[in-house]
Amino acid sequence: MRAAIILAAGQGTRMKSGQPKVMHALAGRPMIRHLLAAAEAVFDRIVVVVGPGMAALERAVAPHAAVVQAERLGTGHAARQAEAALAGFAGDVAVLYGDNPLVTEATLRRLLAARAEAELVLLAMRPAEPGRYGRVVTEGPQVRRIVEHADATEAERAIGLCNAGVVCAEARHLFRWLGALGNANRQNEYYLTDVVAQADAEGLRVRAVEAPEAELRGINSRAELAVAEAEIQARLRRAAMEGGATLVMPDSVHLSWDTRLGRDVLVEPHVVFAPGVMVEDGATIRAFSHLEACAVGPGAVIGPYARLRPGTQVGAAAHVGNFVELKATTLGAGAKANHLSYIGDAMVGAGANIGAGTITCNYDGVAKHRTEIGEGAFIGSDTALVAPVRVGARAVTAAGSVITEDVPAEALAIARGRQVIKPGRPAKKKDS
Image (cartoon, rainbow, N blue to C red; front, side):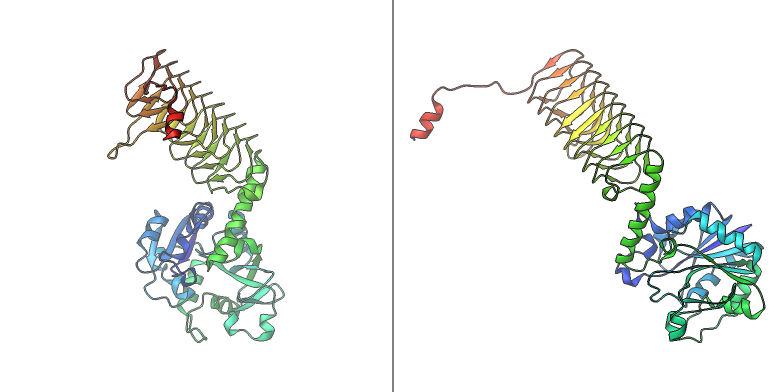
């Protein structure tokens, strides 16, 4: 059995935010959920240590247990708060950090594999700029201690191997060490890292598992959040392309953690995929389009400058063109809405054609209403469909019409003022 304790009680004062640091989003979901996803693939039990008044965070980590660190007295003190929740647990316990959300499942598995060869293992990295990271002091393969930057000598600060914070040991050892921690340091805090010196003093084997800085860097500010976002976007883009999608200008495409792109999908520059998007094989997403919580069928063409909002489903080989917005709409196979239209709360049948400037008037100020457009229907340019309304299969609405009543199948509906011509009127107006 294996358990993880995730430390997430920090207020994140450098974020200058009203929400807990680990609730800030990366690729469309809170950073804590990224770490949980990796941990869930590896550990049998997970306990999250939160701070007082973090009810939203407790909800976000459910169904995992959340325990409160009432006083923020350091990382060692925080880890110890999980002891009661893991009472009787006899396996390995790893301590992770909620603000290190990019740790991968593969790295966590390497950490646990190393536990077979040592009583205590930790994650370490060699950052390009060690800065204020704690330094890992070694002698051969043995890690002797970790010294925090604030307490380090100049010689110790010159060490390139830095602590990533994560440790793993058998539960009986870990909680014994945590119970013996002192706070005789410049911060007057109980450092989790001091368990390393304790294990070494007992003659136990302590080993470091190195991982890339990109995985292990912490997030303590908005600038560091942006760096982490760039890293996770690079991962997501790489995975999309390895899966068979083409990103014409990868660095300009924004993906979410759950974006799914099929084989031979073509994504042009400056496209945003918000959470909940699935694009099936062979579809094309043209430049400057924004998609959220929607599904795009095989061979469909979206954009440029299109917006697909939540609840939208675009059928196979359908077209959604420039400056077209769909919301909670099903666009049938082969249907087209190519220009300057808003279609909301609607069902559009296969092969229908939506003319430029068409809108569904779906909101009456109190409630939303549905519009149904039948298969093969032709909606003339600048038509306003006042919901609830139904246009039958292969029916036609004349350009400029305001449709307030159902249109039978294969009928023509004209609902506009009759054109009046008054000869000479412009000249009279000019003379006056």
